[in-house]
Length: 474
Length: 76
Image (cartoon, rainbow over all chains, first blue to last red; front, side, top):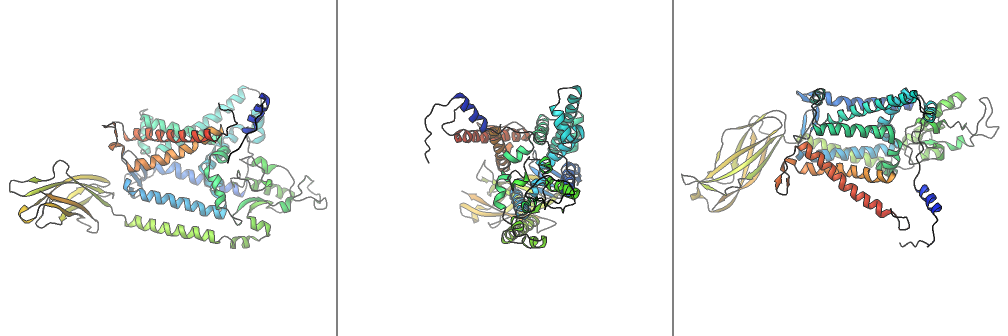
């Protein structure tokens, strides 16, 4: 499509005003603190996820960290399982499972992940808690920011930022602790002997946390998060969202507690504006579903408290669905709509993938072998007139225990193999073995012959690998 | 400010993906630069690799952002 811009002389002032409207000036949001059922759920989830995140690197398993992504050795340890780069498909599978679960939760419960479990929400909740402890609640923070510079203001701001930065750095330290054993990292830190790359990543991740949870906050959800934009594709008219019941609430207006509002022609909304004040993204839920809404239900909790004070029934703002609101459904009617085709398809796909993934993981062979022909010489003639070919076998023991393997070869008659003795490979290591095959040229015609190596565990013959290669006689 | 976010953030995500895929397939210890083996530690190569991927993705995002401006906006 070609658009032609009308030619005109643009005055400086017009240009400036046009520019100003191109960029939204961010209004700082001062969310008011909330208490209630959903706020308690959020606190519980913040605790659970952060106990997991900060705690996991300290757990030990088989005298090593239970969870360690040892990038330097290219091995991932997750409790009893060791993942090698060749197991990439399992991590890819895990990502697919995580994505599908997210689709499922979203289709049923809307932005549950955003509201309760997303790191951005969780860290913002932690940082806001610190902010509230240091600077006070909404009204006090607005006053403090508006106040003239004073020693008290500088002190409060300094304490807040110092605490934020400490949490950020501890988060960065924990993050790096997933890649370098955290106890070693702590030792290095106390001796001031941290490596430059570790130092860099602790600072980088620490300041990313500080910046995102302290400064960026809702802007991450509004402008940076791709999930916020495409989650509407998983929504339908039966998806739970935080909804304002306009039919019950409107027309809104202030009134006395004892006033008969219906006689005055008013709805249940007292227009106190608390739902707007508590909103971490600064929206008014009464305008309907907006993409900025992260489904945190802070407005639900706060509105319920107001309804209690007014002695009105709760739930003017509540988790509901588009259909439920339109058709005035009861909660059990709403629950019956959960198992609709879209949800069943997600559950089915998820079940299939989780099963395949689990079975593949259990059946994964703890032995992998690569055969490389010796590049220096195609073949060699021995003093006894026999022909020798040399191979390098990379034997990977992906198990945590040591294993002993015997190497055999087949494909040509009277083939002799060296070494004959079993090879011991310690747990979670790769060993390169030079193997020599020898045949009598009188019985075999010149050319390239297919052969097969068989590597077998001595104690557990079920653990075995067969690898093809070629034997060359000139 | 928003444009900076739109450049830096998606490229950060793609940098992470590229890093993951590339270094799963290639071991830094096997890499050669102009025929000479890389003598840095794996951790160093991973870090430099990540920033290189991020930089390239950011360059692509910047071009997208730049080309998205329509012709009658002043170019600065």
